[in-house]
Length: 162
Image 1 (cartoon, rainbow, N blue to C red):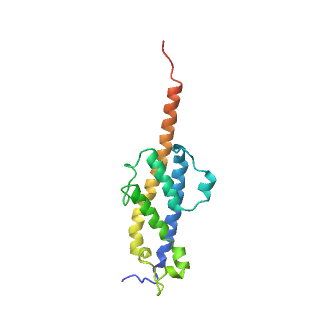
Image 2 (cartoon, one colour):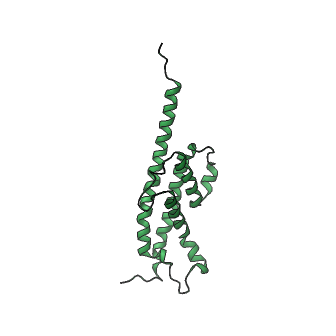
Image 3 (tube, rainbow, N blue to C red):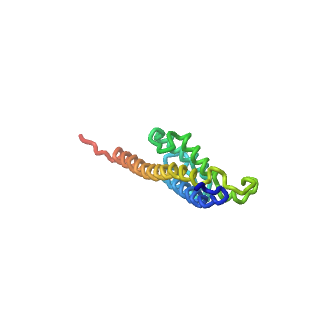
């Protein structure tokens, strides 16, 4: 049986949860990685924003600064452009805005094709991989910061042999 596009709104809470998850993981990545930037991100601004596109831009700056562009990839994300496009896609699929604004809905009240269950399932696979990528990158940034701090300490306190 084919899903009814008028009752396909059931998948929309999943999209909202992915948006929230990605926002939180981006914030964690930025919190760990902003120390690598010349100008750190204000924690209050980071806390208050919900713009995943803005957060993704900062994440891209961090990845470029530490030169991890080649390593920053997963299913559906081959490079930073793909990452930005996937974040823009999840940002544009705001079910609340689509449901609330009549101009966003089709005349018969059906869900846009991107929010219909089969398409959400395909998107969810990419987003699962993205969430894993963001989490592992945040962990990697913390480890990289510790490694660099340890290397600096070893240089400072290196004993001199005469």
